[in-house]
Amino acid sequence: MNAWLAAAVVSLAGIAPCVWLCMRGTRVDALVALELATTLVTLTLVLLAEGFARSSYFILPMVAAALGFVGNLVFVRFMERDLR
Amino acid sequence: MSAADLAVDVLLALAVLGEAVCVLGLLAGRGAIDRLHYAGAASTLPPALVAAAVTVSEGATAPSINAIVVALLLLVLGSVLTHATARVVRARGQAR
Image (cartoon, rainbow over the protein chains, first blue to last red):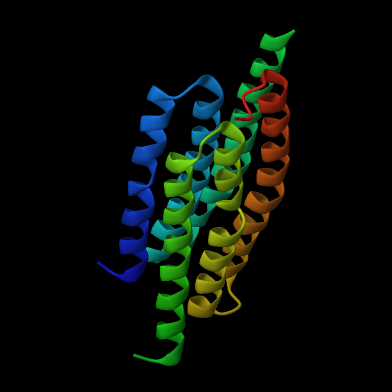
C-alpha cells in the first residue's frame, strides 16, 4: 500500500462520523454532515486515482464534485421550501 | 527517498490532518453554524493540498490538471453550498 492509498483509507474513515451525525443529529446537522461527507468522498476518489496510477479514474472525482454539489443543493432547497 | 517524494508525503499528511480536524470539528461543534464552518473548511485547504501533492508527484500532466480542476470545483461550489446552507440554518433558527 502506497502513501496515496493509505491517505485514501484514512479519508474514507472520516465518513463514519458523518454517517453517525446524519442518523443522530437534527435535519440541519445531517445536511452539514452530508456536505462534509461529499467532500471527503471526492477527495478519496482523487487519492485512489493517483494511488492506482490510472489517469482515467480522475473523471470520477470531477463528476462527484459537480453532482455532489447539485445533490446537496436539492436538499437545501427542500429545507428552504419546508419553511414556507 | 527524493525531495519530491518527501514533499508529496508531507502534503498528503497535511491534507489528511486537515480532513481529520474538520471531521472532529463537525462532531465537537455546538450548533449547526459551528459545524458548517468545519464542513466548509474541508472543501478549501485539503483539496488544494492534495492537488499540490499530485502536481509535485506527476508534474505538468493530465492527472495534475484534473486534480487542480477538482480542487477548484470543490472550492467554488463548496463556498456556494455553504452559503446556501447557512441561510437555511439562520432561517430555521438553529444557529446555536
